Image (tube, rainbow, N blue to C red):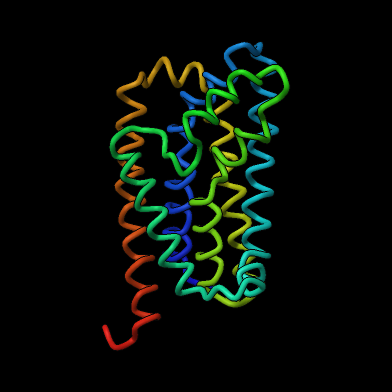
Length: 212
């Protein structure tokens, strides 16, 4: 099990990759035809699906990688590159294409009456490849059950904050405005970029020990 400071860093990292405030504009556009009650139900379903996806990734992620013969250092480099690309989009106040392409978002808007809480809102918009990669790599930092339990609690806490943000999406959007949300998104993107560089460098040093 890691120390308090390490878990605080993990919590910040998970919050940055999920970036609840950045999801507000897309959430509002996808639920524009829904009533307030329906929007709250969508937020609840989406966040539960997000939490389950990420917690399953914590407990089974490394096993799945082993099945495909993928080493953690290689996955760390690949995940770091993916996070770096996402962070650049966030710094530019754009929706990361690694989460949804414009075509996927357009299709989702057309299908709002069919239910969008799980797909595409939870997966891949909230719990996308970047988020899943991040929690798998964080879960590898300590090889004991207590660490995985701690990771699960961190994810549950951050996703609960996301639920509150989505449930209060309308007043938050009015209070923060587009500029406020973009500023928060850029700050989260900067934090994410730093995490991405850490993943890439640590992965490369494991793959090429002579570089140290």
